[in-house]
Image 1: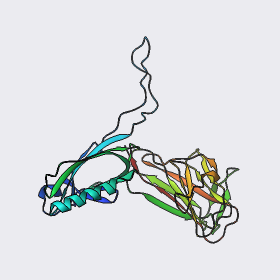
Image 2: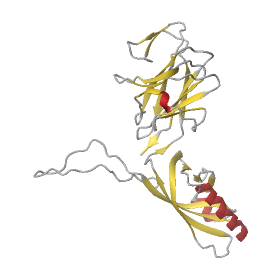
Image 3: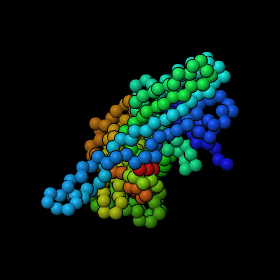
Image 4: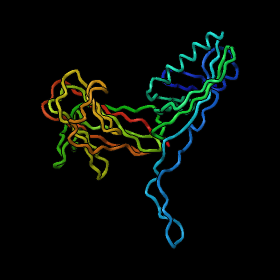
Length: 294
């Protein structure tokens, strides 16, 4: 028999309802996770055809944010434990920031970034336990599985040759066995498209280009700034933000081409990396994506 489900509210971990029913040991438990797996309402308008049957078809059913709830409890050894626990959960979900919420079950671990809209603890009546209800909203209706990461070095000639493909910057044709193609394949095993994050390590005198080269579609993101040794530049393709070393160090202004691309549901995207300027050391390019589920 597998482990019971686990709910993570930020850093606070709650065991699933099977563990809560036994009440064998003190701790945090959740007893209900309402609408976590729901498909939120479409926000695409339906336009009825005037003086005709039916309505016009829509290209995409864009989804609203997802409202869901958590019902849980804390079991302690004394009423003092309960009072302390209320402070613990308020610190975990408070602070005016959105929090990651993750559920681990037999299908894996899935995460949503969520806003805590309300926290309502029931009257503990001086007992050694209390129950509570949390209402949350996930801005993104998708839930995300564990991230997949792939890496490569800069394109380097080996036993074969690596030729530029036409005039498109950052696109190469591999002929023979090369030392490093600079190309990776990023998969998405989910049911919705997902947006990657790419990272380049230091030693790039002029930045880099990341190009999606699936089929006839060629889309590029170009970052033009020196990346010194010991530094990392990351670009979030969903938000369009770039930062160096830490998310607070914004360098998005150095993105000179912003044709961001995603990884399709149930498919993959080939990404070709190319350095700009003088290369020193052994820079690495990394692409990460989390499978998205609707």
